[in-house]
Length: 250
Ligand code: 13P
Image (cartoon, rainbow, N blue to C red):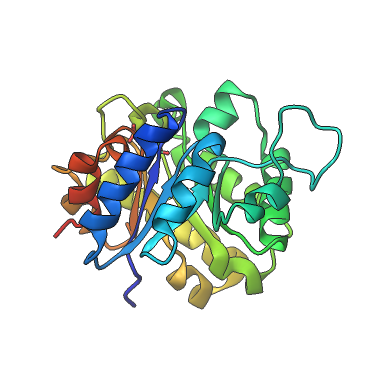
């Protein structure tokens, strides 16, 4: 079965409002005729700037995180209600920088996944192993656990609003990309995990993005692989010059 390609830019903690507006305006022009599904995920403070620029275009608006609670006394957190109010459609959850630098565990990520789905968002659930886990032969097991625990209690009817991003931690921001073969092997494994949980048709439909040093010169080889359905791009998403060619890979 052919799955649509989905190319997403995670801007992480970069850009001011004027820089974000400039990049977004260029992307709208550059991607106008793009054939794939697109998303940009700016910082919370930039969402209100980016939203009106992409409204009605083929680029979706994403957030990089959300609180596990709807509202209340949670200083410094941002709620799904606030994100919805700004026009956010997708929330990236379980990014390795959240898992490892901010100590988010699978239970917390799962709570956020369920809350985001309950509020109608699409979720990009990130999974991926550390270098030492890969070297110890545990890459599949780590990705399996993160997938299973991240999706615990998620009903099959909501699975069409879940995307998985495989981001090997050792490939993020390092310039070291997983080979297309290594990445595809993990994607195939994660698809099997989804099949075990939800059945083959759901697994066949699941969009699995690859993330970790995706650049204009390696995007096409990665996307050519059977189980790689898109990219979650960090550094190269910060400039139209690098994001547009990835988004329009041939
Ligand atoms: P880089 O593309 O900078 O390696 O980042 C990948 C990533 O973490 C996207 O979420």
